[in-house]
Image (cartoon, rainbow, N blue to C red):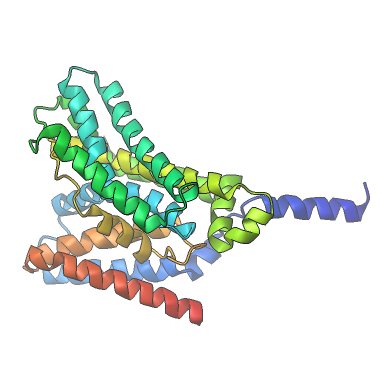
Length: 335
């Protein structure tokens, strides 16, 4: 083989393989600015309050943001393809409820958890089918799923919560593992594990490359031979699967499955992704940014309580944060 042929072959492989992200690129990206915002919030709250930096409060924050972060990892992949999934709050609720109902019926914990995850996966798969082959806009398709899944939560339970979940199941959300003298919450470990897995999937696999390609230019991606419908079905299915994992962890943490669980959590999940630098225009986003974005939203929620702001103002603040994040993204693109 000639040198020219070798160079051409190498170029083809490089184009077909997702390129890794270097530390220099990370420092220069939006994630660094988002992290500085998180750091500034932490410094302000530590100076303004006496309880923010206590170990109890910090671990409560880390535990409480876990199911939002895990779901936001999936939402990030959907938004990268220039889509949106509004059903994540309802999927979180119905997945946790499905596991709880199976447990109440005498099923063992692993099977009950698998049932909850399968429930979420089915919703995501149906979302993908409606968007690709049904030609529905993502907003409409997932809004319908939001209402249907929430309706199932009320219909299956008659509006009553499922209680008396076994301790083995509750340990998934309540147990702390002693590591290096600290008691690390199990939900935090789940977050870190899935952050690594999804980050590797997006940046080191061909399927991750295709997700970015669909969001960057769907028409050109389809003309290059990539099954764009298959990519979309995959990301919506993965989004709901990750959301279901978050829902099961949330239910285990609360120790009860209520039909109202995770109501309006889609705002938190979308905000975590957008604040973390995932562009609603598609083609951009990282799991690291989403992780920081989820932490910002939970610190914001916790900080408002600590400084004495009424919880009724929380959604107004969340809406403002989302609008500002999108405006900054648009200004960055124009610049």
